[in-house]
Length: 286
Image (cartoon, rainbow, N blue to C red; front, side):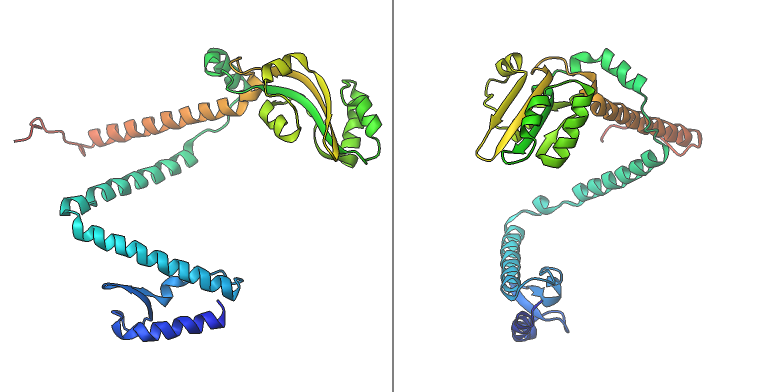
């Protein structure tokens, strides 16, 4: 915090200190009987902030504190007691946090997070109806190359090739001359991601994907080379390779639920056998 700002606040705080409730603290603002102290502003201003920024941040914080306390005090004055009683909600929230933290620790200690390819494939085959695509996806190679770059003609000649030797050469040229590129056409990506990288005129995606395999477009500075190997359209069944991580997470989440339910059942059984649980027959309200 800058020296000038500190001195300014100290002057204010000394002026207010006679009204401050806490002896030894320097108040810098007051709303009725609530005080904001200089110590409360620790951490509000970054160490490297300019004097102008420091003053602005401090002022914004003070103004925000005043407004918050004004509405809080008004609420305290006008709300009924039952409207201000949050003891049960706070206790329920506290219990939920404690249970959540304990369950999280149990999961960390006991959960098996290894999911085999066989499990993923089996889940996929049994639940294909769950994996309907919500967006078009493609397998594609694309490169963005400056028009002034060397080897543009060579890239233009080989970018659509499937020959291993051409693919290796394309990788070398991409690393040397391309601003952006994606050359792994074994991976599915969202078609929308491709459109964010390449200025395609493809508002009608389905018609575009059905009719276009290789395309070259340009803007004022760059060429864009696109080779679409395969595509799946919205509402098609999503391919397994595109859903691998999703399925793995589903399986692990099911295991989590099963583990927690098992632990709860074991705790109940143990407490029941130890006679730590009593359920009374007369449970009706009198």
